[in-house]
Structure formats: C-alpha cells, structure tokens
Length: 84
Image 1 (tube, rainbow, N blue to C red):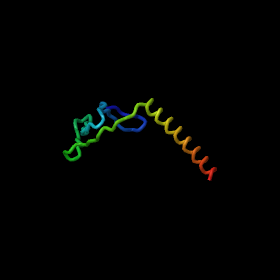
Image 2: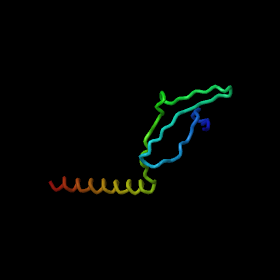
Image 3: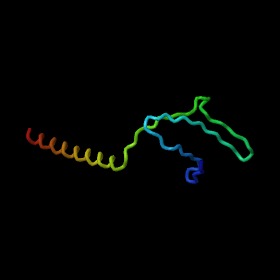
Image 4: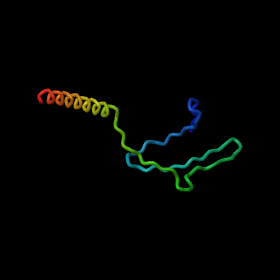
C-alpha cells in the first residue's frame, strides 16, 4: 500500500484478473505501536466480480461507428419527414 498525498488515503492495488473472476479480500491495518485491526466484512470477506474491459482502440472504433450510424439515421429521418 502507498499513501496518496492528494486524497489523503492509503491505496493498494490488486493484480489484474480475468473477466468473471471473483476477487475476495480483507483489510488489515497496523500502526507503529503494533496495534492492528482487521476489516473482513464480519468474516465474509469483501468481494467483487471482475468485469470485461474493452481496449482503447476497440472502444474508439465502436464510438466512431455508433456516431456514423447516428448521423446516417438522423439524415434518413429528415429526408423521410420532407417527403411526407
């Protein structure tokens, strides 16, 4: 873990996992006097399911295609209104 001076919080990183993986974790905090506390969701651990991510180039292509589709649809809609 590392202290983020901007947010004033400690942050840790969990290594990347495949989509659909359930990640379970608990938090253990120590101080310089040797005191510690465990936060583990009452023994059930915290968990989350990893969601799939799109790569930036793929996302860009999808955005461009959806924009083109929206423009074409809007033009066709205007043309059909002028014909009526």
